[in-house]
Image (cartoon, rainbow, N blue to C red):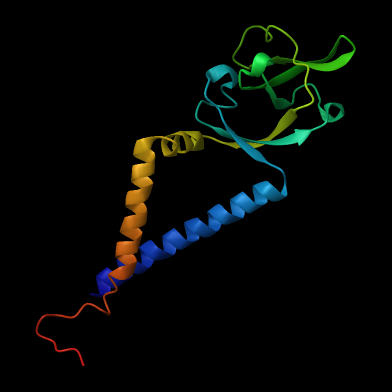
Length: 169
């Protein structure tokens, strides 16, 4: 019974700690205006490997410097791109960014003219694989199974389990 109680306590403590860390990270991200993006291509390797989660923060064009890694919208609403700034430019009198992926031989085909610029603050390698898995049906099933298992561990309190030859009282 002691072993079961120890395992139960360890599992519940680990789950509670993970919950607290998740809340702190989420609150910190909200407080500091950070947004996560998952790196899905190898264009920024080796600095940003595929499967990394980059935390990005909005910045004004005037704050951007050559060498910064930024995320901007692709033209025609085709998603986002996270590349390194190689030149600050202007297009038709509007501020623009020339970008290039570290693993690419040439700059992106055209400058990005946008006010929606987010600079990478830091990144966590491989965390994106977990994020992508949790967005799939099998990831949701796995999370559901973990939640059910945690409830079962919580409910199976060894102090409440009575041997068959004992009479509660």
